Length: 155
Image (tube, rainbow, N blue to C red; front, top):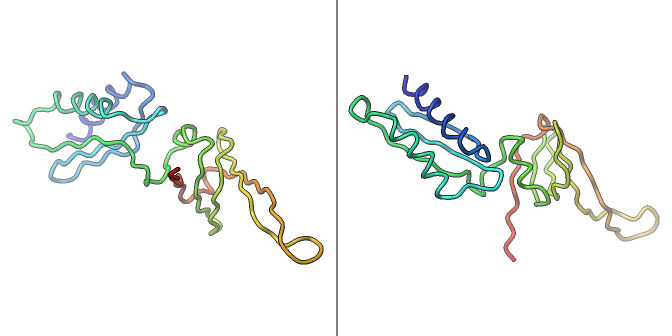
């Protein structure tokens, strides 16, 4: 009952701001409601407050006591939805694949069903000693991605 009502209220609130989308909704047995959001242009504190109000003001604490947390997906959290890749275009990602590979590269393309990463690697010269820097590129379907995280750089 509680989950259905919260889900309905959350969907109504998200419909008012289509740039926001749900990453996770968790409701524990003791009615602790945790909502994790992301947005095409990021998530502001005001966005979290608006979603929180839309849920909290429409639930009756006399009927059922609850606690509510509404937050944005943290920068260290993995990307879990294809929609999140669009806002991270041109950023560096670290991706673990179903083949057991770990690839670090720049997200250069996001399409329906797959992404493209590009990076530079040092490889042995085809002839002679030493190494040469080569450009690498990989197209990965969302099914091939076990985990994808944005690599945060501080300049």
